[in-house]
Length: 365
Image 1 (tube, rainbow, N blue to C red):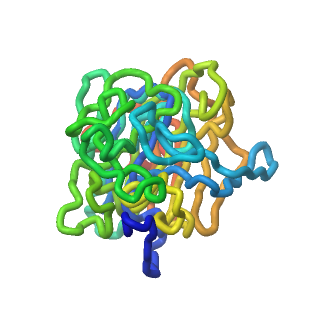
Image 2 (tube, one colour):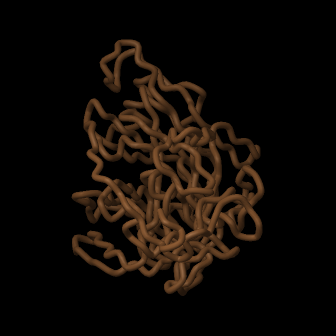
């Protein structure tokens, strides 16, 4: 990335593994508006979690009610107009990796995340299967009501603004780098903050990474001068979340369009909202998984879509949790070459460890 010219060079990279490229490190973006509750990440041998926004000018294709529709993305990122992606202190979209209600890097409506968890599976038999006596251990946890977070770092896209950590070098071509998110997600902070127990507002985005910094090139190439943390990688990982997506009744650009998604961590770690598509691997299909996404203002159908090479989706949908929060699980199983999104019973607990049979029951239709 040449900050003087706004140009980028890259090398060919080959993905490997049964779930590639989704087995690479993932970040979890969430967008306004949503109400957060609990969030955690469990890992089965490895962990992964990431999310990212499409670049301006990218064609977006989706199947809605059995009809394939497409449009050109005009969202330039938090606090930026479609013609200017240089991040300015303003509202941001919120992105959470495990418990957010309107964050996801594709929509902009209120989300209230109550809790989130990320976990990894500890193998007793070494075969990588989902069943057996293996257990899933919690790797990261967030509880909005208690104001606690362990293993997560909350970020947004205001790097280098108002003297905060990060950088804007490269201008609109790169966009602003990652920054520490303020507790309400609307601006940058000088250091890591715990996301507050309040609704993430329209057109606000929060990105959830792990609490492990990218020291010594451990994350591969990252934006020089940017805030950089690892995402969640691995063939076997589990994300648990509780969230709601209240309707704001607002209209206009990015209004009342919440979302939660997983993005290849390489995207936010380099250039997520820049105008130069050569500076992001999104266009080459490095992987975005929209989990719960509202595609247009005021809609009440949450869609799930894969943006890779090739992409995938269907006309199926989840009912938007407008009034009450829901609990959900997102399970990646490399051994079974599958990914599951499952709405859970309200009685489901997000304990420090979960037996394999409990995880199996979550994915039974």
